[in-house]
Length: 101
Image 1 (spheres, rainbow, N blue to C red):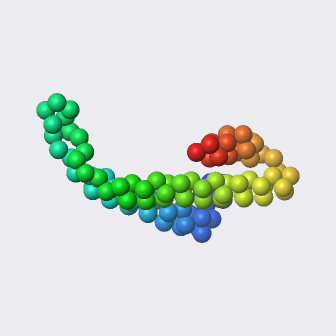
Image 2: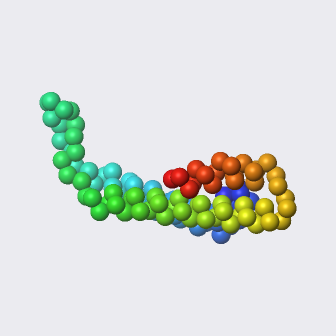
Image 3: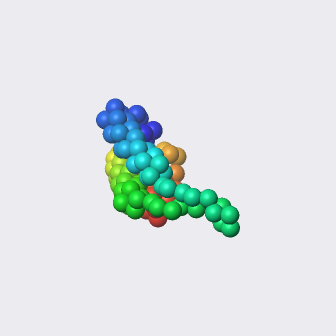
């Protein structure tokens, strides 16, 4: 959000995406049924796999959108010949991190 100078559309869009990701995460954690076992302690008895798949996919979608927004804004700033320390830092550290993830 800071890269885009808190543009309303970016802030609202990312907020909605992150709220959705949080909602799926919360729902997946509530759906786990666990039981206590004297030998192993608390262990999961049943899980809803489709919720965990949805959580994984949502996480990848959010990361890809953040990567895309970062690449676009960094390219725009780089093309305008304004090479600040932030732009160099994003190229060196940020984009590599997101690409690996």
